[in-house]
Length: 191
Length: 173
Image (cartoon, rainbow over all chains, first blue to last red; front, side):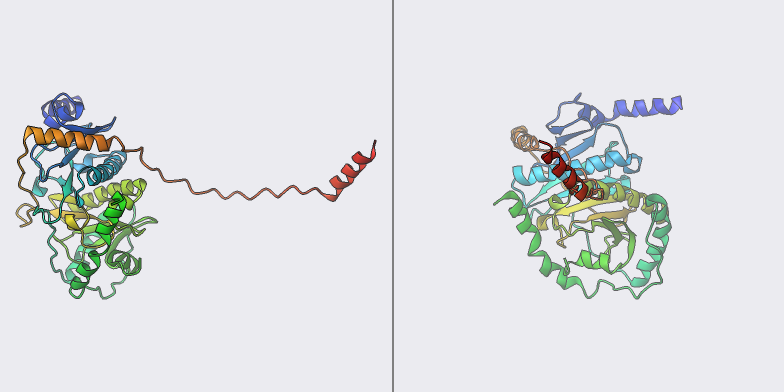
């Protein structure tokens, strides 16, 4: 509808990130191609914090076509590698806030790529909460039809085996994680 | 890898929601919020850099759809999509995963960071450093088409007949 299109045009005019992505507003641009722009965040979580922006205006993630979200994901991976090498950081956090309830503040879809150092005291930690097997099963039952709808198929609702809850697993987690990841990052960097 | 928790959870189909040839998605057993989904490549890869580009693309496409499923089925008002890449980023299992965390207003989860102040000079130095390294970003790796099985053309062996012909040829002079 023409009226709706007008609205979108109006939104685009007012969206600062559309102007940044198009290069009409000055920014510290670190990467650009036909589809995306990557700029340094002026309010970084850590030095080197990159904002990856699609050039096309999308307010929220569900509006983004498959091809574009896939491309953004691959670019985020490439920028993560870039940061590991350029900043000699110990890891990266790739972060999307989708919707106001998730902390989204901009009118434009953004993928954050944030360099991480050990003990940088950044509060993007995911708490690990306990959940009962019954509650998990209940959520699974709710989600499966929707997953089937959005992804075309879902795991068939098999008769429930007694589900393992996480309770007994926790100590194992930590032990294993000490070995693999950082070695791999340093191997990747050739150090 | 046999002792990897993620590989194990996929293999045991423990709270699995979706799977295809390359990717599996399941409910987190230690959820940050109710409905916390983890999506992972089936091929064991400790860090993101080891996951092929075309699989990363698939993971993001599917993460988006799983996030939509959270909106539709469990009343999520928002979602966070998070990759913790490396121990410093909070990665707790040596297998690359994407977290889809359903959010509601006042759900008690605070993932927002406090911005750090940077001078114009610091920002410009970082820009140059990162831009230089970003020049090396190569075209994305596409999935190689599966080798088409073509029956090997049978080797053309000189048949007896040909041999006979050749013999005849040689005889002419």
